[in-house]
Amino acid sequence: MTIEDIRSFNRFYTNLIGALDYSRQLHTPYTLTEARVLYELSYARQADAADLRGALTLDAGYLSRLLGKFEKDGLITRGPSAADARRQRVELTPRGREAAHLLEERSREQVGTLLAQVPLERRARLAAAMSTVRELLSESAVPSPVEEAELREPGPGELGWIVKRHGELYAQEYGWDADFEALVARIVADHAAQRDPSCERTWIADLGGRPVGTVMCVRDDAPETARLRLLLVDPEVRGHRLGARLVDECVRFAREAGYRQLVLWTNSVLESARRLYERAGFELAAEKPHHSYGADLVGQDWRLTL
Image (tube, helix red, strand yellow):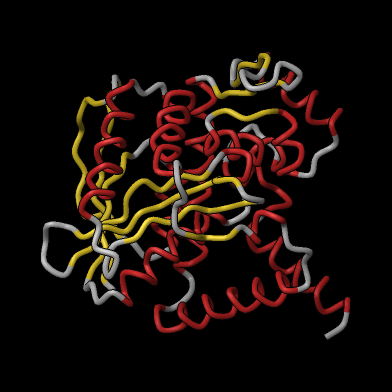
């Protein structure tokens, strides 16, 4: 393979998805870079400007001008970070979330139209080819330190960290009240008191000796069914596939433990987590509106046949 082979493929695919004319293809007033920023903010809910700059590899001056435009248009708010006043917090407004949601919806429609042109019997071949490209090119990339995080059993005090970090993050990112932290505390306490190590497990994602993520696999009430619970990735390490690793590890363990299906309950507002579940093969089984943790939510049941 030559450099020109790769450049030729890039030109083919870029023209195919219409990335060179993004605003016309998706019928939006936003450029591709503007859409990427809205996308990142919609999944992070709120982020530091420095985080956006690093995740999207954007020039600091360019990003500042872009955020200024978004603020003027009422799409974002900016202010000092609660964790570090030297950093600038960026958060979508309701109008900004609506714009990001519309972009996501139209992007999915565009890809759906593209996929519809591929016969069903050829889609598995297409998926395998795309996976091969990602795998081969990723092998040559310098790994992020986050990708080297260790998944291990909780150490002393870390069950308490799970409760504390859930309470903090969901209050900061979604405005949920103490009822949610109380729910997490009950789940953790029940698991600690009744856990069967042969078929139940908790993982801590350890980065340099400190926890930055977690997930649980517990036995469900239904026969031969496990339940994925309390998936969490700290904001500072998001975007490095740590969440996907935690979900994959839970799925692998459930299969090896002999379960026939893995289920989970989440809320529609947790969009980044839902995307992880979809990528792992989970399917939406049911959803129902409810009012919990001080918010109007839509609860969702997801299932994966093992």
